[in-house]
Image (tube, rainbow over all chains, first blue to last red; front, side, top):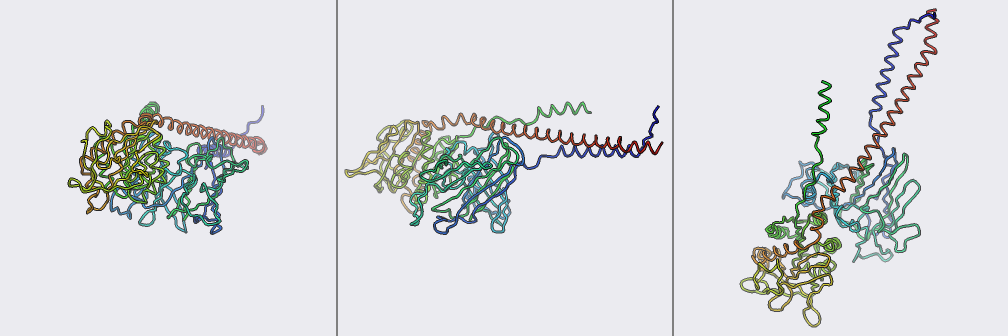
Length: 292
Length: 327
């Protein structure tokens, strides 16, 4: 009969402690939420808008957004909104903004307040997103509103005329207000009638000269040239309402949207570019670019 | 206690708030009067008397965002200054699209005229005015006499066959041989009222073959200056104008196709849109659950491997040493 080994009690307890503690660590790791499915690789935009930039100032006005997939998902959606700074009209007269938050101010702005009331529903609700923006060493906190119901009844070809989105940024005791379109940029379909051009400026049918949507090394290219090059598409074939969608995204895939603009006239105030990124219907990232 | 908890969970699930059925959107009339906000509010107050709520677009942003919604029944536009015409000119493709979908429009004053807002006026308001006529002092007012031309049920039946309406100017189309009659290739056009002394069309009703309706009030030119005889308040307080505007709005709303089609189907469209969103979210949840399961399984395997390795170390090295020590 083999000799019985008297196991040391301390060894057994150490083993049990190791077993239980490692089990707990594994359980806690298993319960941890999966990290961000997307990483923002680049976000390029001009600091200032120039009318006829490349003709008069030689400035190229390029916008570029790059993403890296950190996980796998069915749908990746990049939603652009381009907004123009304006003077807000409030539902109350002689309103003092100093003590109000951006959210409170936003709800007093006439188009926002009216749209909130008139499109209020649980099925396709409006989006109210807290955002941050930076410009010239200043950081602004604010709120962005998007009304999908407006887009639902609007024509794709009119996306640069119908306001779907609003941005309100708290600015000291006041607020910066922007209203705008679900589109890559202003006046995508032209609308440059009666505009005086410099002598050597080309006639432009769209503010976007060219736009490229990349998935890894494959690009889908759009051009506003009258004679579109082979392999390129015309500007009216651009994805509607500034919304680019990719399906069946794999880990480590790269995506980007790049475009160059040329505008014969610029808005008086700043413009804001708000880019929301959705993975499988849930917003995972938002970017606010302010351009003077 | 555990049994109570087990009973509570399904009960809680049953009582959890379910998405409520879609709320029917209240129809409204959109009124744009540019910078003359008080005038816009006065027009909205008259429209409210038809039983349909009016919303005043005090600014361009409200106009740009409100016009596409399904619950809009009619758009009333009255503009008087170049900045407003410039905005309307830029925005005219949206107005034109709304009209082509079978929308309803009322144009008051120069906005109906081609000369000031060309693309807008050409399709929706067939006045094509290029000449301005002036009002005169008439029966204690400054304006023009309106006489009934074509009886249009809904517009003219609550109004007398002749009345004087406050207006500073009116705009009409004139050729080399004098005033021209308005015409439209898009549908039936009727001149409801004419200017008494010249026969120039003042109220023009258009019903297109696509089911849109518009009424052009080619006169009704008012100003925001109180001392002028054609100050806007003198117009909106006039009973004949109130009846005329209510009649025009009701006639345009009742016959237009856009709201008749989009209004009742709004709930279905919302449900379809919501279903698409829910489907995407369900897919996202499923993907996340699968990723979680994969992660748990991987961690479980690593842990099992580590435990097995630990057991191996114990059996291979520690127990023999204990054997040796006890032996």
